[in-house]
Amino acid sequence: MGRNQKTILFICSVLLLLGCGPSVEKVVPDRVVGGDVIDLRDPKKASLEVPGTVRFGSLETTAVLSWEPEDVFAQVPPGLTGEVQVYIEFFGLRSNPMEIKILEREPLLRAMCFGDSIVYQGLPEALQALLNQDLYLSELEPVVLNQGKAMELVSREATRTRWSNALDFHGPDLAILLEGTNDVHDPESASLEKMRNSVITMIDEALFNGVDLVLCTLLPRAGTCEDAVPPTTEQYNSWLRSYAAARGIPLVDLYQAFVSTPGWANLYFNASDCIHPNGEGNRKMAEVLAEEIEDMYLASCTDLDNDGYGRPTTESCDYFGRDCDDGNPNVHPAEMETACHNGLDDDCDGLADGLDEDCAGGCAETAEASVVATSPVYGGSDLFRHLAFFLLPAGLALLWRSLRRRRD
Image (cartoon, rainbow, N blue to C red):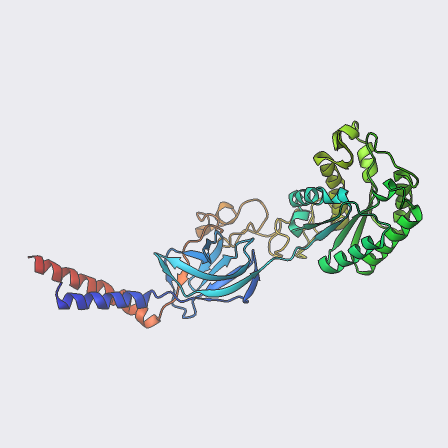
């Protein structure tokens, strides 16, 4: 290749790089949480629309909600935490990296199960699974903390201290208290007065700190696991029911939930253990607790975005109908599917963007906009961008003619 040809090729390469130079900035705070949407903007406002991918570190996001000539709106991958570099990539080229710190998302409902080994051996995990499956409670992104401890006696000072520390450290919105199983089975410490004084102290502390509280009765004992001396399980449960009713504190009667089920002893307990419930017993406890939690938090209208639509099974909302996105006031059953490129089911009919017949004109043939990352934008100088578009084709043509002449 002659000198002229090399010069032309060099100029074309420079023009190409200058015209498509990736330069973007993020228009979001330096600290976000997983699931947030960030705006990747071309600061020079001279974008070139090319296929590409948005990456958070080595992880490719699968949610680019929309992009415009100067913006790419990408969702931070849920579950990703720590400091990462965000960049856009196309044809092996990367934009300038942008540092961002992704924090753990704070749950809207932090529940703490506190008790002895009955709690420790599986109840919080079973409750977490049920809350995650609940249509509306799952929108609160609930976290259930396991604060169970084997062989614990509620009548001891150490238990009250652990309760105080757990409330201070975890700051739960809801505390579920299931204590006393070991007290009624321990001849040396069995005392209804000690038990109730300790429980009342713990209740008062939780309510003083603004924590919602659910009390639980003790489980029945299966087989040969009988109470040693008074107070018996039934005596303690009777006092707890009366005390909760007098103070208006929610109570879940786990005892009745078990004994009212035919064959409960064999169904909810293993043959070798007549105190601790098996997996089916944990699920049963979780079911009745989940029902109580739903009544507590969803008995009145659950309308997190204040658009009048919320939980559909109550008439206390301004409008009846399920809000499919209770975090966006512009999404609800009365909305029209007119924004055909935002990746949202605006009217909650199960169809988004071009899949919804409400979209007219050019929107009708457009599929959902919440597709995988395609077409991010890249910035470049207006001058060099236009020079590249006008001079690059001419330069390549001149190079091609020169090479053909040389072959001839």
